[in-house]
Length: 221
Image (cartoon, rainbow, N blue to C red):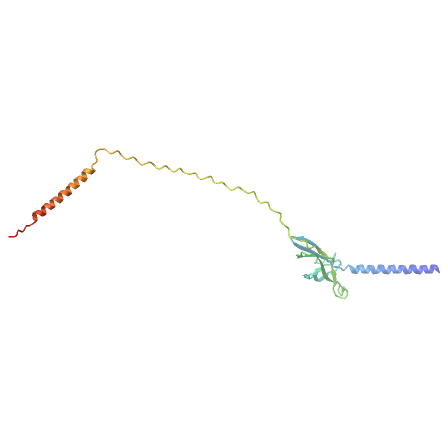
């Protein structure tokens, strides 16, 4: 009786373990459909530059749509990723960047919707509706500032060129007046004046004499 009970317990336990293993196997196979969104932030001259990555983990193509940043709502066009390990024209991994300027700490996430075409009439998810994948948070600390240029050392000051004092040209001294020549002989000024005066007086006497001669005297009888 005991042996029968132990066998039943062992069989039940094995069945349970097998069921869990199979469910895990199928879950792993299903979880291989992933877009793996992720982001890395870098501070560049006062701006946060975030490099976002999406990667297809499955062997068939996937179309990623409704690509946007949470919470600011920045959007990106649809992306088609080739199957991992396949010979599709599209690569299975792509990146793009976004820039942010903020002085406050904040967290950003990338959200994408993925739909795989696993066969002619088969998709994942099976209902044909894209599955949403959200990246881990990318933290911005709000401390990204423009780089401050190092202080510049002013060039050495060159003393101004000194101008030699102007050379004063000595002013020639005024020459003393030339001394007058010594006067020689007698002074002729006074004799000339006397002669003129005598001539004038003689003329006056002559005029008076002539007038007297012409005078007519009338005597009454």
